[in-house]
Image (cartoon, rainbow, N blue to C red; front, side):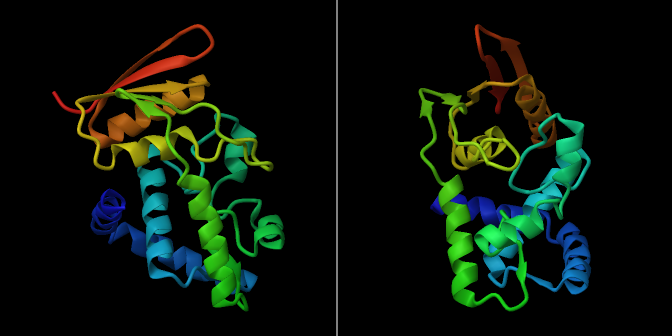
Length: 207
């Protein structure tokens, strides 16, 4: 929990100015659609920071909860605000990320949706002896993508990680390509190779 909070405030100060741009389009979007932004300062701030990081890492404002899939049509649908907002509000009360919800949503309903999201992403990570196996996570039934995905698993592990290298096992080539971009943005080195049925990537975090 301490490492998570340290990571939160690092991102908050890093993206404090870019997040203002996110806030402006969010407010306009909500006004046009009868929605509101998550009233929890911490949840909304974290999601705005994630949106800023997605833009700076991948060049587009992808959904803060899912890394790019490599499928152009799906990735287009996942540009925030994504194409699934309306259907997910019907199912969860908010969008999947608990960023947008109806203007009349109660505090209890916001809290319940935020809790659902956090429970999805705070699953135990398969990390042993400096090797993180990101495979085997449940799939989101709309996007067909894992929750949590490789990107969120790696970010969670790196909060407080003391090693100089991290081996990351992924299933798809797109995940390895995404990891390369994440490494480049964060100033790490990344290499990967295809194994028998999976891809093994190495992140060099410190010289």
